[in-house]
Image 1 (tube, rainbow, N blue to C red):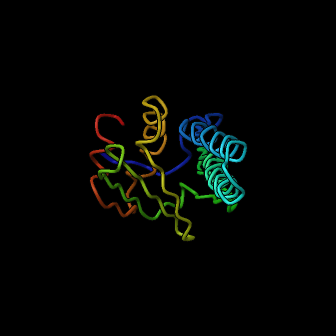
Image 2: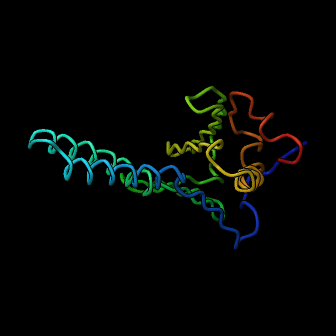
Length: 162
């Protein structure tokens, strides 16, 4: 089967993979740790430690909530606290698909790089089933195009019409 690189999906199609729902749980946990810890602390040092611990958890949650990936047209835009990276799918140079075991189960990561050197890693196992299928369907033609260097079981991820 031959694939052609080009615009991904219909021009108006936009796939947005937002932050994990666990980020909200992390935010609430941080607020509870910080809030109750400072109010119910026995002495000043324990209150300071509880406030700092809660603050650290809240900062981690804010960082997680501020990260998302968007696929629109022939580009992927990865947003994070460090800024935004734009990867051009029509200039895709390599695709690496890695499957591993994480703390909370199986992890699937698709790392894409374009000719300009921009790299974007998509944690596919963190997406919902529908978002994952839409993402694979949108990226399939670009990833499987001739001239794209693939490593890992990329074909396995994109088999069966994505």
